Length: 503
Image (cartoon, rainbow, N blue to C red; front, side):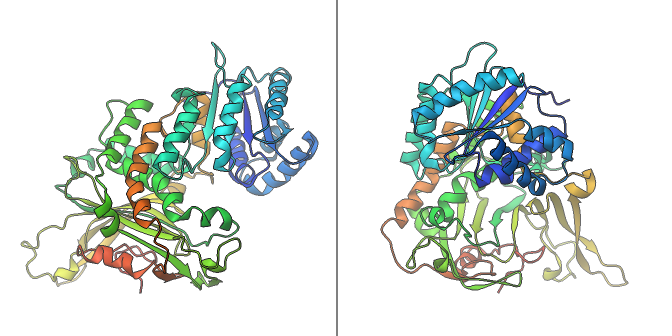
């Protein structure tokens, strides 16, 4: 049975921003609706705008009517009644002085207790300054009966050196046990189900190795362009934005060894071992990585202008909006099994999935069956937009002649468990409040991911020029197909549940 967290104050730096209103506060409402918040609870938004408590509360409550889908009005109101506001700059000591005075007031008023959770929903440039100020103001200090925890959003660094520096600055103030580096993908049910699927079923784990698996594909495809994030995205790109965090988390969960127990440190040790076993250097960065940038096209029947035409994007930008790569994991389980990763914007379909392609059965028994009839067996973990698992296998087509046809078995979370819509943050916020760091990244995991990415950044450095282009609404640049075809393989189609390519 899930237990309620200790009474606490939840402080959101950037509390008036998009992340807070669209995802964090709706997640808090969902936790309230499921009885997973303490009765003693307060919310504080910290931002630079001039606003009183009542104004902040009214603005946020109006937004929650639209974003907290499926939450009753009384539960939304319960959350709204606990909303408060502190105005101030994130790098101004006076902000933390004001916050330090406000916390005891709210703890007394709402019986919220002495513990506090700080969420850094801010641009990355403020991560280190906020932590420094929390430390200087005594707000990060723990003592018996009073915990203080800090959730740090992505991106965590821009390269290996900056990630190490940021880890150093944060850990000079906080202990590792106080630091929760969040990746909201890990809050999605299907991502959490990867370990359950593998380690709780005798059907899959015996096959989860190089003897039975041909290759693995991990796809994070988006139909949207950069929208209003042009300034951030043009300085970041698809590689930094998605690969060291989202894709490598999915890679680690798929390839990790069974932990000795379901303990936060044991799970994170095994995930880090996977990244440490990826041998990736200058040669692989040049041969096994593809990038591209979308040009104008049509996505789901709507026109999408070229990336370079987006607001706040340089007209001659060479920032990649698509990246694909081939990785090898040099350990006993996975030697010889390639992992293909791809992510991009402006693609044909919004889809995040992990596809496990099993080796084909020999045709000796079915010598009269055409080779093309024998479809590969794919186990696909669908993460978004529809969460679930599907398995494709061969079966005899009814009739006098012996012909094989492919069959799909599908499990959907929403259909089977009758689940309500969730943001993906509920599990992670709850885990942080009860002190369970299993789904959060440690410093060594962050740095292990950047060690893989760094040779790619070095290879691209200073190479301005024309990027391979792909039309919006396609599956990406042709070079990504070539990456697979040279190994005799194909990407799974973004348009259909199969391996056909999009042309």
